[in-house]
Amino acid sequence: MKTIKPDEAPVQEMEQAEIEVTENKSESGACFPPTFSVSEIKNKQRRHAMFLKLKEEKRKQKLELKKKKKKERKALGDQAPPKEVPKTIENQRIYDETTVNPEDEEVAFDEGTDEFSAYFNRLTNPKVLITTSDRPRGRTVRFCEQLATMIPHAHVYYRRGLALKRVIPQCISRGFTYLMVINEDRKVPNGLVLCHLPDGPTAHFKVSSVRLRKEMKRRGKDPTEHVPEVILNNFTTRLGHSIGRMFAALFPHDPQFVGRQVATFHNQRDFIFFRFHRYIFKNEKKVGIQELGPRFTLKLRSLQKGTFDSKFGEYEWVHKRHEMDSSRRKFHL
Amino acid sequence: ICRLKVIWDLIGNKSFCSYKVKTKTQQFCRNEYNITGLCNRSSCPLANSQYATVREEKGLCYLYMKVIERAAFPARMWEKVKLDRNYAKALEQIDENLIYWPRFIRHKCKQRLTKITQYLIRIRKLTLKRQRKLVPLSRKVERREKRREEKALIAAQLENAIEKELLDRLKQGTYGDIYNFPIHAFDKAMEKQEEETESEEEEEEDEEESGTREFVAEDEFEESDLSDFEDMNNLKGSSDEEEDAEDQSSEEEETEEELEEEKTKAKSKGKTPLKGPIRKKRAYVEIEYEQETEPAQKSKAT
Image (cartoon, rainbow over all chains, first blue to last red; front, side, top):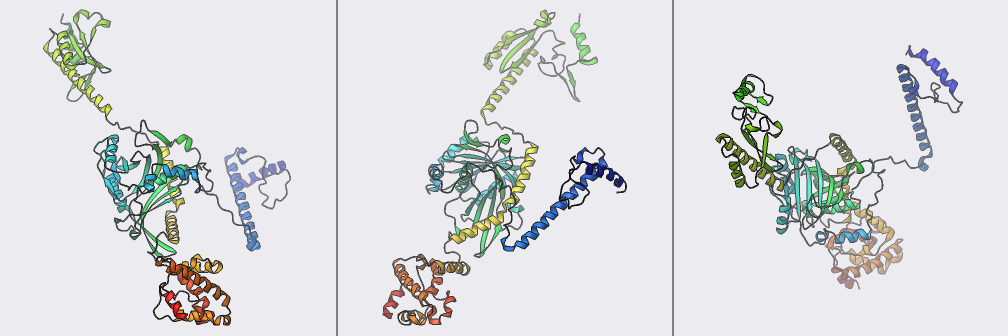
């Protein structure tokens, strides 16, 4: 500090000379807000020192402000203004025009007549066919098996190089309602194509952080054959709504509460987290949940009307990175 | 004189040939007109004055021929003949064009034609099947997505959300009668009732505890001792409503799921007058009534 001190003096004089007199300089007189910025000082050491001092001052000011506020709060007691809510990404989310209002009639009408209306009117029972891309590796195979144990009426079939376009009519003729294709890359599942069969929409997801059952800590026993309940969280926009219905239609209607199993699809910032739990009510204010089953996260890449047809299909929504990822506060699901 | 021999001596063995590729076991010739691809005396297009090859361009096969008569004209040296698409006819064409040529060249030309047609067929077949499209991942994007996913996971607070949802469903009653957690929720409900006294809540399906004489006593109190009680007003009001409710409940026959709710009514039912006015605030959980016996008891009372 010895070397710096003599340098500080001329600097300070300079600052004080330039400054217009301001009031309320209760803080240290070391650095008045200079009209030149710290970056104009050519000497690195001096510049650094000035910068540190500037920071120190700012910190002090902030602390004082906080203390003052706290005091005021205490003084007012009950009449104190309510604490300000901190900003979160969810708070600051850009309002999406397609957000669904629960009483919206148009949406209700649409949902009454869309491809899932058959399911929601209890006309069809779900039956799921799970398959993979060509030549699946061990992890993907095990993942498929575990999915099949969780989703009732699910069957796993090997792909064996068949073209999806030929597979689909066969599925329809055998009464399947859903086709799930798990794409694999480098021995790890990374994509999911979910196709609702009697010409329903096809959704393509990116799959990440797959945890198989044996990798889960503190997990319960294997899931039983009971039909699980379904929880869908945070699907607010029209697009989110349709995806939510897609997930709901995977499971049969009447969950067997005896089984106490619940499958959760939770949407947060366009990532859909899937979890499978077993719950138990300890009393009516506390519930304990224990995770069974695999977990994975999905991110929607595209939604296509009609069954799987990548070349000629009509896309309802495609994730375009440059347009859609430009803002950190804008989400689509 | 033996020009070709000289050429071969030079490029083949002793000196340098720019088309030659040497590996440990073999020598290859990179010359595009070479018929076998190996560097041999008989396969070298430079060291043979009479030479022929079959080459393929855009799915069509051509026969190239070189004769010594045109050796002086490099621009016109190779004669290009288009071969038929039909394999058999193409073979015939080769035979016809190379009619008095050495056996080796004819044979090799036909072999080459065979190979070419085979791989062309394979190409056509493969394009009909599904083709795997490789989509490149951008590392930066992947890293960014991963980070965002982690943050979203933390923000989601999944366990809490799931527990909250389950508790909400329990409160709403989607689980029906499976779980019996009477006390707390119904205390709250009771308080609400005191404020509101909705008529709906007074549907009653009660079981009778064996030997509760209090029921009978209650009727007597209603008739005679009303004035004695401070809480008479409340009692009367509630008992009136109860009577109405009883009628309703006797008409409706519902499940006994709402036992617990009725326990709260038990208080308003007026059990407490027996035990004294103080008791009114307490002990509402205990007494249970049975629907069917009510009218009988009423008749008893009257």
